[in-house]
Amino acid sequence: MAWDDSASKIWMDGELVNWEDAKIHSLSHVVHYGTSVFEGIRAYHNDNGTCVFRLEEHVQRLFDSAKMYKIDMPYTQEEISEAILETVRVNELDSCYIRPVVFRGYGELGVSPFGCPVNTVIAAWDWGAYLGEEGMEKGVNVGVSSWRKPAPDTLPTMAKCGANYMNSQLAKMEAIEHGYDEAIMLDYLGYVAEGSGENIFIVEDGVLHTPVLSSSILRGITRDSIITLAKDLGYEVVEESLTRERLYFADEVFFTGTAAEVTPIRSVDGKVIGAGKRGPVAEELQKTFFDIAEAKKEDKFNWLTYI
Image (cartoon, rainbow, N blue to C red; front, side, top):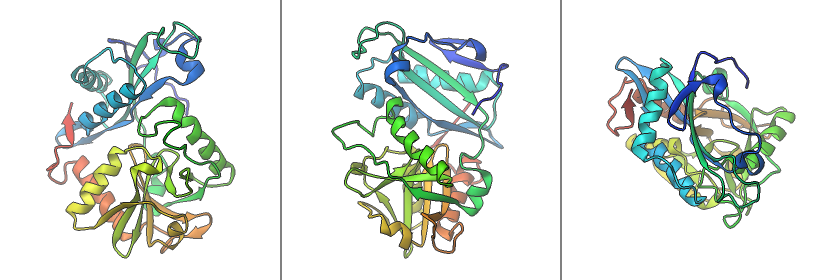
């Protein structure tokens, strides 16, 4: 995705700079080794103003990811949270996508990152439905990828690290080349893990099932939100290891994620899921999720931080 956002500002190491001036050196450690941790966050506009969805949890996960990779954060969580709000505010954005990224910059080019400075960047821009507006309503077509998620003693998948997404890119490119909208990846044991950038749920006889964290998945904040909402609506939610064939036999399958939000899946590997369209459980969860973000329902979980 390329676009002209030259009128926007990006928060870079404590200063707001013009979009075109937010540059790094080509010999920065992150360019060569993927040494970055990041977040994807959404802000929504409603009758009460513009609010950031689960800001505190996203910032906490950013710091947890940095801890995993021994990155000493140059700012406190409170400072990063305020910088995120400031970036949205100064760009006069309503609903938008926010990308904080912390990375190893220009210093040394050995594998060890310890001689490199830590840089922090926060950008925000308008970004609609990740898998398309039609996909949100009618569902998307996906394929199970030949690329698997790494084992837990290889790369820590609970850390949202830039390098991890090379694995996701392989699956995403393969899916596109095969005519699918997105991929589903299996874990190192062959159980269902997640999409290239989304968590996944299946519905069987009114019960929601989702892969356990040990299936090499990201601890998704939208995933957690949907589990919370589902239980609040009276659904049973089971976290377990899921075999591939359960995708095909499920009544419904859907993705969750900051970018994807709640996106139904209408087919897997060419096999129609349920009625081949958004199912009633996904629709109810999708509506409830957006009703809270859009202040049509009470924010009883305190998920919204207003700008």
